[in-house]
Length: 56
Image (cartoon, rainbow, N blue to C red; front, side):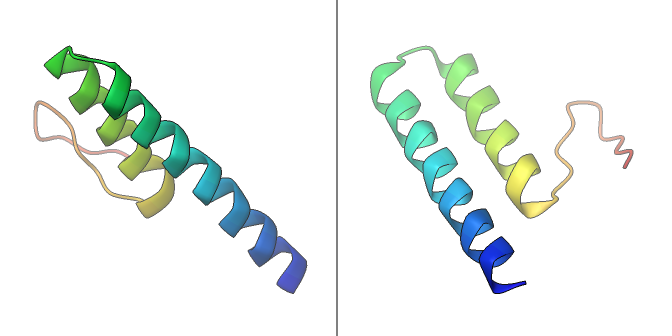
């Protein structure tokens, strides 16, 4: 169980690093918002949808 938590933590850090790199390199607002929302939905189980509807 502890090994899975460590693996999950490492994967989350890698994903966060990729997000930060994308935020630094991309200058298109829509792309930045889309990348950030995708990260939040993947790791924090939040529902952010443009029409207000969420499905899990």
